[in-house]
Length: 97
Image 1 (spheres, helix red, strand yellow):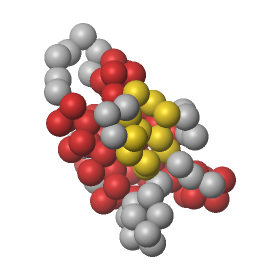
Image 2: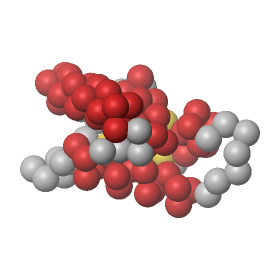
Image 3: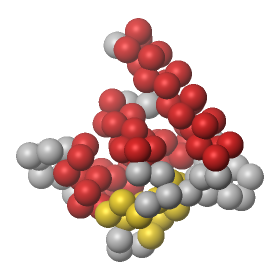
Image 4: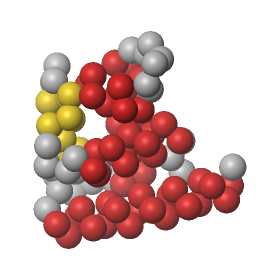
């Protein structure tokens, strides 16, 4: 199960699939008006990758652009799967909270 901030981060990446999203854009979207470090992003990205099994087949769904940001790099089939997984996790999180 993803924590709420990791879920919000995944949602933002899904909305901008195929685009490079800078670290600052992610911080502003998920932690508005809050001062947090880049380490928080790395922890959330790791959590999302584990939940989605990202990298298990050797291909990264979430691409890291070192020093710049992240990109959800998914062909349409994986994008649809990612959306379905995200929806299941989001609904389950609401019921388990």
